[in-house]
Amino acid sequence: MTTRRRALAAYLFPPLAVAAAFFVIPLAELARQSFSGGLASYARFFGDSYYLSALVITLGNAVLVTMVTIVVSYPLAFTYWQAGPRRRSLLVILLLSPFYANVVVKVFGWMVLLPAGLREGYWAILLIDVHRAMPFMVLMLAAALARIEPEVMESARMCGASPSRVIRTVVLPLSMPGVVGGGILVFSLTLASFIVPLLVGGAVGGRFLAVLMYHQITIAQDWGFGAAIGVVLLATASLAIAVGNRVVRGARLGRVMGDGFGG
Amino acid sequence: MGKALLTGYNALAYIFLLAPIAIVLVFSFSDGAGFAFPPSGFSLRWFRYLAGRDEFITAAVVSLQVAALASIGAVALGTPASLALARERFRGKGVVEAVLMGPLVLPGIILGIALLQYFTAIGLTRSFERLVLGHLVVCMPYAIRSISAGLYGIDPSLEEASRTLGASHWRTLRRVVLPQLRPGIAAAFLFSFITSFDNVVISIYLIGADTVTLPIRILNYIEWQFDPSIAAISTIVLVVTIGLVSAAEALTGVIRKTTM
Image (cartoon, rainbow over all chains, first blue to last red; front, top):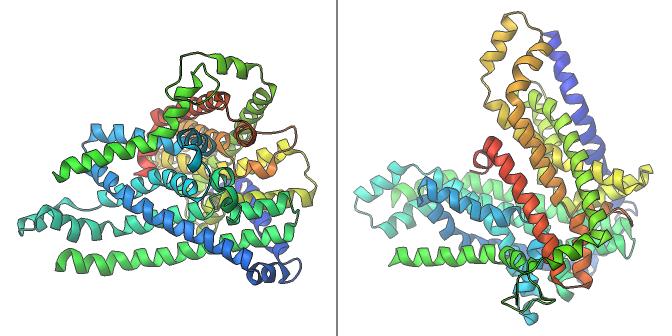
């Protein structure tokens, strides 16, 4: 037993030391740096309408991208779920190719595809953010759909429900955990979206928090303020994840039982 | 009717998903200097052009070196971490897991800026070391995930049998566990390599004037110039990434296991 204890310590010490040195401590230092002038950095951020509107733009974009991505991805996830194993392995390759393509390569591809007038500005950001998020969302939704037991749908059908009614009252509510789970993932991913607004955002791109933070560090060289923007970004993302997790838990028990079986 | 509509929508959506990648591949083999569609002819001139551009060659070398070192480190540290997390129960396991897997959920730009400030504060000035250490931290969770998936696929009763027969803990590890774990470790290396090779948001904070990774070099180039040489270098990046993913997939089927 003691060998086992000793082995455990030997296994865990090196990776934990590296994670502490290059993940935990730097993050703690970042937080500390953001308070280096007391609350001055935060007062500057929340007291200036320029930065507040940047927060609103970043949040608004993340919400919009998440909603659009859910709507445009759902039919793909549905088809994936209904497909046989051979079809599925083709679809997964089609989904994973854009998933694994480097973000710079994807943005460059869109710059070539889009007509000159659309190449820069908010619509380009929205389009490319949705494009980036779709494979994640389809796979998350497909995973949630795969957990629906066929018997549930079968019994709805046997009770005389039409196919569209089965989708509306059984499939949709039961896939809610996937919608919320994928939504959280896409939301936090998009909140930190950086390369897309940097390359195609034009003037509005500079108002995204991640870009603003980058410019504070590289151009203004105001590290305390850059750190504060980072902390605001991180706090917003964490809050969204915490809220989303609560919703998922609620959705699983409340909504699903109510709609799936009652209707 | 509804079914035809769904099929049509799917076709359009997959065209949308693949179009920006396809266009890059097409123009990397064009013989023109612009992006007029369709390209006027087939040529390898942009690949030849790249071969003569030192800034892309050196960036590719930096990217490959950083990815190799970070992946070796991630596997060396991730293997014992996975053995502890997948096989043992101990107090504080939740915290250990959160610390080790944390970089997976943290937005990369936040870790990038945190590391930049931290490295500067502790006096680590060389960009190459900064890049290797930064990438190591983000690669480790991917390595742990792949190796743990491999461990869950190994029957623990073999280890028990080995120990019952009198083999020591270390001997069991060396003779029973590690040989079976080889595909998982190989996949861990490949996924770490892709993660590092692909990284933009941490690298952008850690690069130096003469130590630039390939994605950042492409990014800087796009800001000033717009010609098919970028399509050619992008094609090379795509081929490397897709090749590594396919190799990892062939080894373990990790994608199917972890994303579905």
